[in-house]
Every structure is written in structure tokens, then in C-alpha cells.
Length: 116
Image 1 (tube, rainbow, N blue to C red):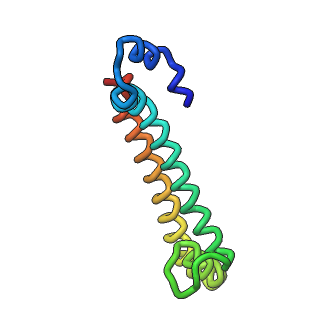
Image 2 (image 1 turned 90 degrees about the vertical axis):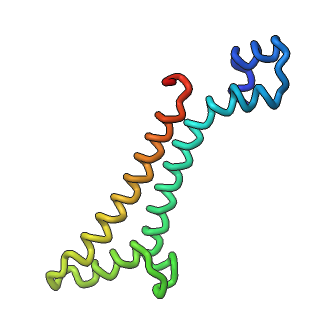
């Protein structure tokens, strides 16, 4: 809705372009980057939320694999010296969230019409 009132949209209206053409050629390329970045950040938050809920025992059932469940199981045996049972799932969780966020940043840069 914010993009609808920008000058480039008004200029396209003045020259007589149809609303569908304005949306496809002008508005969509300008909003794709921010929407993808927000979507990837929210995907990372969803992954962390699921892992947190599984770690607390209120997420997925314990019969289904989850990084949060693996971290919880590793946390229970951490005092016995089996540190890798917690560290590897925790590192994997951090790497997955970082990869999703970096993918969003790369997509934003690749789809930014100002950088073309």
C-alpha cells in the first residue's frame, strides 16, 4: 500500500499503463526484496521457536526427530561427559538459521532493482 502512492506509480498511471502492468513492472520488483527478507527472518524465528518448544517438551512429540529434542536429550546427559550430544544439534540449529538468513540477504541483493 505504501508503494501505491510513490511517484513512479503515479508517473506510470499518467502515461496510461494498466494497473496490472504497473503492478508487474514497477511495484512487484520493488517489494520482492523486502518481502523475501522478512519471510526468511520469520522462517528462522519459526525454526528457533519449534526447537525451543521441543526443548521444553511441549513441541513435537518425543517420537518425532527435532533439534530441540536432541538438545534436550543431550542436556540430560551433559554431566556424564557426552558434550557432543548437545553441541552438534545446537551448532546445526544455529547454522540452519544463519543459512536461511544469509539466503534472504542474498535474495534481497539479487532481486534489488536499484542494483541492476
